[in-house]
Length: 281
Image 1 (cartoon, rainbow, N blue to C red):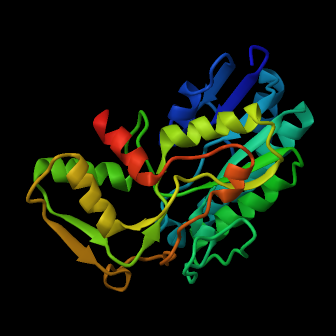
Image 2 (image 1 turned 30 degrees about the vertical axis):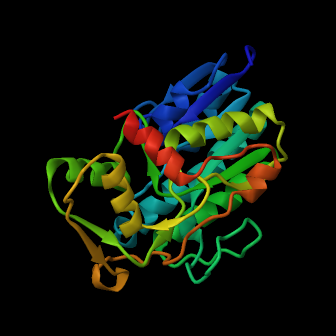
């Protein structure tokens, strides 16, 4: 990979920081929102043309799920139109494009993990913006769209899991959904899997890049407490309907990563990932 030049947008965020640090033997060019306005066609074209990357990885995202209900224009600008601009610039540079999406593109009405063949049905402004971003990213034929969910870990640990761990360690009570199921994604495993896609020359397309298995948030909270050696933790079960959230969340959002495994990229279980993360904190 010595001749590989990787341009990473959104490099100031949780995933972007980890991605910038995770490419071996590559010339990595990380850019943050202060370096590049991903919603500006002129700026995006100039950045990509100047860097001349072989791979462009878009980690930039508007992630305020409830805020998107009040700021849909901003959510769509960052989550939909920007990936389209970056994908076109990547295609013009002859670069492969990698874009990250989310479990929120599904409605959560399944009882088995969603596969890439299942039809999306977004139920919020945020979810709709992410789905449109997938479609625009995929217009660049040489692209990977990787759906992740419930990210945790990384240099900038700011996720729900990270906040949960911090609260438990401080002795504060933790409120956790008992009726929302997810497939947690360890940032370091997502980075390794992204690199592995290229090592395995995986076919382009949409993949679910999550740790194996699924759990509800209440069970996850108890696993966090156990792994962190915290006894007597106060974990309060909450139901989605009682949380007063502005935007709809998919109730059952587990994702199957079997397609990724068939491409030669196997992710460990979420329990294994969580144990490795907590052991290192």
